[in-house]
Each structure stands twice: as C-alpha cells, then as structure tokens.
Image (cartoon, rainbow, N blue to C red):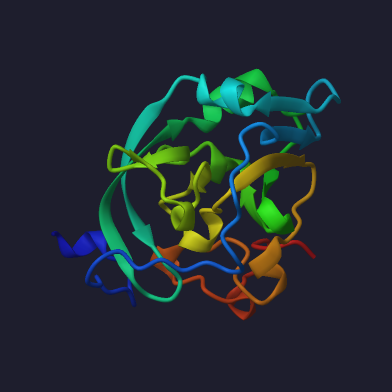
Length: 198
C-alpha cells in the first residue's frame, strides 16, 4: 500500500474493528422507512418504504475507512444507493448547503452538502458483496470515506436538508465539525473560523 493513502496519525489494525455508540437496533422491514425532510424544494417530506428503497439503482464504491480512534481499514468495497439518486428523487431547496443524517435512537451527524455529493459517498447496503452485518449498520448506513468515520452514520433513517449548519451528536460533544482525517480534524477546539456553526 502506498503511504499516501494513510492519513497522519492513523494505523492499519488486524481484522476489521467495529465501534458504535449504544445498542444495535432491530430491523423491522414492515415499519422501516427512509425520510428526506427539512428544506426540500417542494416543502414536502419524501418517504421511501423498505421495498421502495431496496429497489433504487445501486452502485459500488471502493474506499478506505478512517476511524477517529486512529485505525484505518483500507480498500473496502461498498454497494448501495448514490446520494445523487436520493437528491434527484427528493430535491433540496437551492439554499441548502448542509444536511443532517439521522439514524435510529435519534443519533445524528451533520455534513456539508459538498461532502454528501462527493465522489465516494454512498448510502451503503452491502460490504464486500454481502449485506451489512447488524453491528456494521444493517440495513443502511452512509459511507463518507474522505471524512472520519463517525460521519459514516450506521442505521440511517433520514436526511434533513439544512439552510444553516447545525452540529450532530458527536459534534455537540466536542468532535470537529468538518472531520477531515488528512488535516487531523478530530476535536472542536481545532476548528478555524467558518468550520462550524456559531
């Protein structure tokens, strides 16, 4: 592996560590839905049932995965739905520059719209040609490979379009608002002007 793929302060562990906050939720396909709400272009909330979401076109991404706890897992093959597909089906207001990704139990992480639409970002349903395991986010997680992995929210249930940035779960608890591993943006005290909401 070329050294340039490993961000500063990171190491490659044995195996594939799994870290998450709280318990693993149970998937109930009959009641599961995926919502897009907030500053939508129409002002309406968009909702996908599990069969509707499962039927969306899929694409694959090969990407590295960088945890803020300093391990990196290299060369993961994810398969799922491109954010562009969601945005086309549920367009945002032209003023939207940020989103909040919502998960089970009210967990959240904020992203810039440019991070959501970046090449490599994916609403992932599979890892290495198999459905995600429950502890890795089954049935759906977002994967944002160019940011620290707390932004790659597991057990995703919704996207909220934001006209103004707002901190998510870990960002409210002292993590960096942007989370670029190449700049080691781990903690909020490192934020420069303009990198977080006032």
